[in-house]
Amino acid sequence: MRFVHRAHPGRCVRLAYCLNVHPAASLAEFRAGLDSVATPLRERLAPTEPFGLGMYLSARVAREVLETPGELERLRADFARREFDPFTYNAFPHGGFGASGLKARVFEPTWWDAARSSYTLDVARIACALRAEPGPVSISTHTGGHNSALEPHTRAERIQQCGESWRALAEQLRARGAEHVSIALEPEPDSLLGSVAELDAQGPRVDGFGACLDTCHAAVMFEPARDTVERALSFGRGLAKLQFTSALALRDPARNTRGREALLALDEPRYLHQLTARAEDGSLALVADLDRARARFAAGERALASAEEWRCHFHVPVDLEGLEALGLEVTSAFADDALEHVLAQPERWQGGELHLEVETYTWSILPGLARGPGDLVDGLEREYRHVIERLARAGW
Image 1 (cartoon, rainbow, N blue to C red):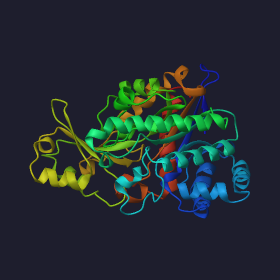
Image 2 (cartoon, one colour):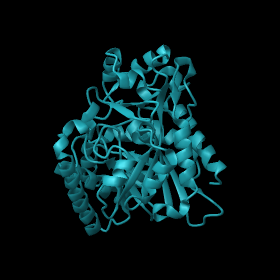
Image 3 (cartoon, rainbow, N blue to C red):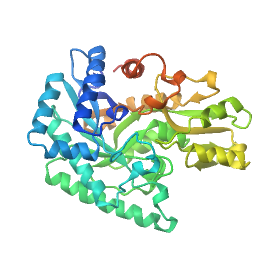
């Protein structure tokens, strides 16, 4: 979906949902997701105009598309028939997304492994072939690797290696005439360059690379919304993509037993759920996942037991305003504030476009109160309408 503003001619907001909410292990599964989710969603929200897609193709599916004779042409024709607009891509999970035991392996391969560049280049080739309209294309990816893959003394060396890999990829994109493709580096807690502040301060500047601001990730790191937006807008090529997402929050975890137990009960074997505890003095303690948070709290660790608030990397629907019945809160106000600040500065958008993506990939594991009534299409529709309302308030 495309939104324009009377006072900002030549600028637009493109909105999509990320297809990793129904990840596909094969091209057949990918097409089935388009049929069962993307198409009915388009019919509800944009029956007479192009409908944006936040594409997710695993490395295996991307290879299948590129290696099957005529498949790119068939996919392009199918997208044209359905009026799908694949303007942004997620090249973070290499494969197995949603599989039990994935956890930190979602960062594999790292950016110092050639397989990461190969996968990203495959996605870029597909993106260039499928883009129906001229204009920028964004591809989000992680910033290097998970901290569990790092030795402390190798951190600076790994950042340097990432920069070398990024520069080599940029050269390959230029050689293919893909200067309109922006690689959007997405900081995630407990990873190399795990916050927008770290990315801005330490990340190598490479032509063609910008920032992907995930408002769930930034909220978990307690980054100030407007400062984070400014850093993302000023890094490299700028803000290539805004992932509009919300995290879970727990205030006064030592006393809020109901909320604490509800949060810790969400521990599950698929996705990472990093948790940050903030003390009254503003100091932060980062915990790798919910099972470790439970163990460390039970052991009486002061950083967790005396914290004024915990925030957890557990994506919840962006239209969700709270979970009072569970004693939990959400960080939707952070996401709203960040979006408002970005929308107020269209002159700083890459190529005149803001790429805006909803990415609540946790749909299948959300507790019922967070998921709301209906099926996935119903839930995505509510998220879209929440975002569309905020765009309308800003005149888009």
